[in-house]
Image (cartoon, rainbow, N blue to C red; front, side, top):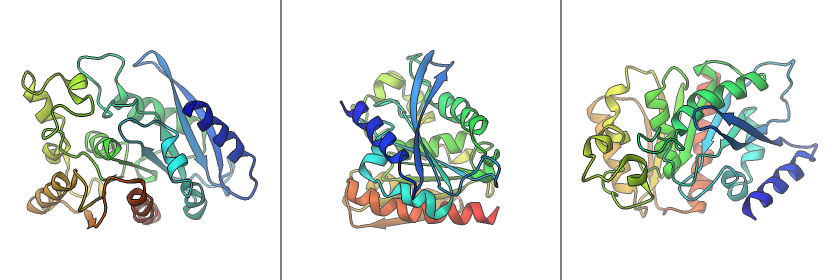
Length: 271
């Protein structure tokens, strides 16, 4: 029912003439041999014959799907207009963690988003077709996913943001099906070490990525986010970090996305 409701919302919003349109997009994933549903928010000024526009890929959290951002934070439609940027909300599976799972061939969401979806969007829309016009962000599992994808594919994205992100998966070996994607931590600790964002800072060189992340001080991910911030300071990695009162809630993300969109707009304009 949630899926049907999500598409009804999308098509209704497409009928509005005074704001961004919301278009459902199905993409055939060759890597996973299945069709993936996505939502594309197209700003009102967009024209296939006008200037190419930047794109923000916005990832959902564990237990969610591609409709979550628009359902929980409908303001992103107005933000797309305000900043004249396209927002793509992909389906990342309920608990994919945006890995290419070494044990489950149905879970190759790193390949899907960083290659298949980006190529599809650039082929269908008049977008800026390089990293200067692409950013990726997300909340919770999607915050991990945004940094994971951007760190591993700095040739694809020029900026990345995480909101309440699970940026270190190791303290949570029994949670959110991570063991089903990588194997149990006790058996495959090397996989967990290689695929946790906080251990991937060595992939960053110079100012190859513009980074912003934040977390509420009452969030269960607060400790891992603050630790990532401190590690970045130790390594002189430029980034914007915000912490403020708040938990792992929609109310927090409604506020956080405003700061991140301002950050990405500044990045896009600088290029």
